[in-house]
Length: 111
Image (cartoon, rainbow, N blue to C red; front, side):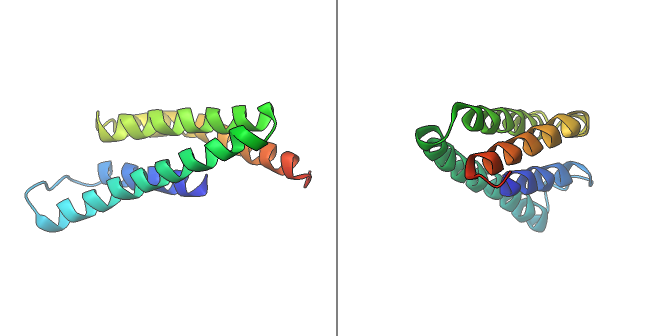
């Protein structure tokens, strides 16, 4: 979950500076941020499959909610270049992240 959150922050950072699509360095940074998001999303999908198989429905649902919100933000940033969407959605993402962490901790018997 932290990797997903970090990747979203990285994507958002691309919108916080002036775009320089003609500069090789800019294209490399942009490519790295997109690749980081894709790797994080794939890893989360793999983990989510395992969670769905072995964990309680509450845990699975909490992770799915986080995944949906994170994906919506990533799409808004990458496809629509919507710099405000992440800001508007940050509270919802944070709450879903906390809920997912709490569900995992409960599942593990930590809380």
